[in-house]
Every structure is written in structure tokens, then in C-alpha cells.
Image 1 (cartoon, rainbow, N blue to C red):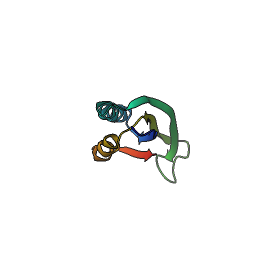
Image 2 (tube, rainbow, N blue to C red):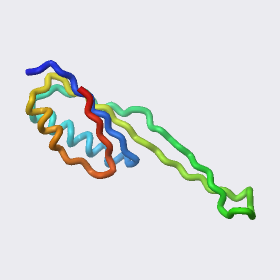
Image 3 (spheres, rainbow, N blue to C red):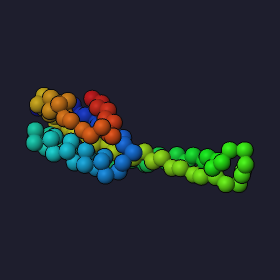
Length: 102
């Protein structure tokens, strides 16, 4: 067994989607015999946008929109070559961004 640690960062706008993806990654890693910590929820980035409802008429009438970015961190220790191979082949939904660091 190699003693390499792998950190996986997940980002998504949908909290349910990111939780399902994290569970799928944990399941795949456990099947290969690696040790796992996480998924650790990282702080959610919240962006608020304010837009005028009608241009040139009512300045006081505004609408606000919010965009939340949810993040998770999964750490994998005591990896095998099989672990890395299966993690590279895993298919995640289109709304999830994944970064793998060695």
C-alpha cells in the first residue's frame, strides 16, 4: 500500500446533489480498502445580486437573487493503485465540480 494522501474537493450549487456525489465517492474508495475521512462540509459561499425590476421608472422597486456554492472535502489515506484508477473512472452528475489533489 502506498502512503499517499488524496484530497478531493467538490463544489455544487445544489446541496442534495453534492451529498449524493460525496456518498458515491466514499463508497467507491471504501471498496478498494482505503481509509477515508469526511465528507467535511466547508463554508458555503453566498452571493446576493440586486436588480431593478423596471428600468428608468421605479428606483425603489428592486428584486434580489441569491446564489449559494456548497463545498465538501473528502480525504483518502492508505490508497492503492486500484483506488486512484476507480476514482478517475467515477461518473458524477453534471452539476458537480471535482478536483483531486495528491
